[in-house]
Length: 109
Image (cartoon, rainbow, N blue to C red; front, top):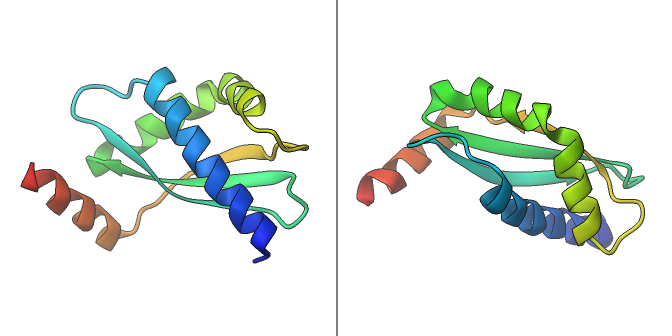
């Protein structure tokens, strides 16, 4: 991965995280975390990988995000100073180890 793509990935991760904090509500007790962003080499597409806790809410979160994808994309377009802004796609991480790690962190609180 080029240095430029890595910077774009980190920028999208930070900015989209802020957008989610202000614009999305997934319900009480539901936590969605951006794990990584994978931008294509041509910078036209970005896959945003989420982890959702509890696990059984993953499809619900994905459905909400996809229902508002156009609006969320517009928020991102306004915040980023790059052209073109990659088109977003959402994926839920189903990795068991990652889910257990998040659950341990939550139980500490």
